[in-house]
Amino acid sequence: EEEEEEEEEPKVVKKSKMELLSPEGENAIGSILEEYLCIHDTDEAVECLQELYGKGHPKELVNEEVVRKGLMLALDAGPEESLLIGKMFSSLLERKVLEGVDSAKGFCDVMADLADIAIDVPKAPQLMASIIEHLLEKRLLDKKVIGEGVQQVCDESEAMGKHFEAVKALLAQ
Image (cartoon, rainbow, N blue to C red; front, side, top):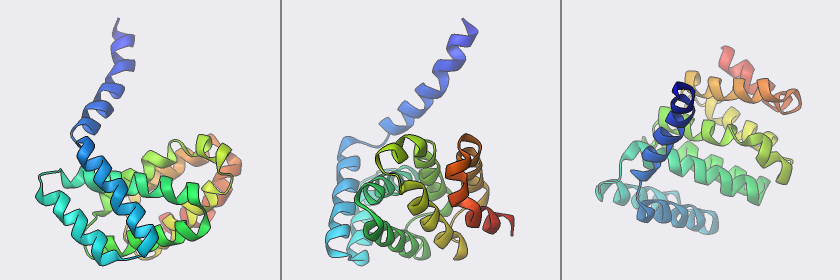
């Protein structure tokens, strides 16, 4: 009985955390990201995210979802979109619209599924590593949080881990 509770507990925590972000909030984030990929207007993205915060959506959940959903869109779309999303994240982090810890958690959410994503998008590990590397070079992500996600990827797959060598070197600095 205790084992069952231990197995269920993380799922419940994750579900309840996601329930705090309303479907309206999740849909708005998707729209903001898709619009950004079309028009590349960071100022518009900032304004829309600030509107979400103003409507009472928890900033840390919005930030984590922006990164998670943005990465998924970018990795699925390809290298050009990954570069654009990386630039958007950089700008949002520099402007303090996104926070480094929340953003790193969003990256870790996607890295936890990277092996599955790589089946459909073989370049996903390489694209993800390049975005993380760029943000770490600018000191915009929480090293401790992102380091845990990178370590998990490297532990799961030596082949995927090779894409994160430069990231690991930055984390060691």
